Length: 252
Image 1 (cartoon, rainbow, N blue to C red):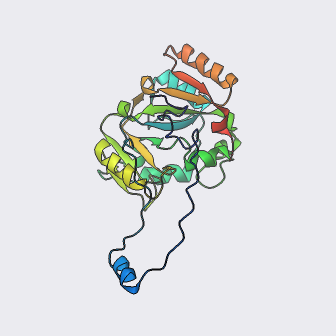
Image 2 (image 1 turned 45 degrees about the horizontal axis):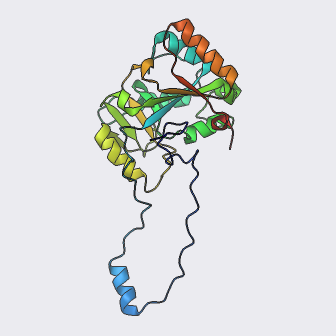
Image 3 (image 1 turned 90 degrees about the vertical axis):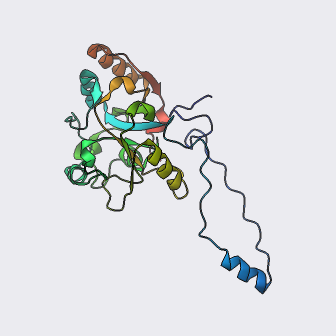
């Protein structure tokens, strides 16, 4: 099965394969009072489209955005660590504090886990490439150009069974969590009914995540691609697949 630049099977990525508009609703026809009463008796809350059978966490890729300078330190460490001090911290102090105090169901703090976006075009990534306005982001994030950033794609299968799915920002007070791959898949399928693009969902993994688990790195241009190759070579670690895909870094 062919896959797109974001690691999805062909046809399943809304960025590379935009959805076609839904057909216009059929005209409403009048019904008898008895038929209307029967319809009300059996009425249910409308749901979104059913989740496709292929919608599962196993086999899916999740995404971690970082600054090119921070990627250099990650390459030297050979792993992604939740406790690592980023060379360029994109998150604000407020965000760091909220994630340090928020907890997943077993009591671990959100900040103690390595965070990945479930969608390749997540809300946070959209905010970041559009100028990083708002309290979620640091001054360093606002000063960074989209081309200074890179997107690491990691298969869920490489993260182990101890993952936590968050159906929205993991530090949000109304966010719901599902622990484990199987429960996370069920939560992902439920979320599909209201947010089929999963723009706010996160997957949290126990670190460290070895750099060898990274399946692909998406960059904005050839200059950044060459720089990524250099820093991996300098660190003495294998270079993952590097995809140059400028549209992923363009503001909407």
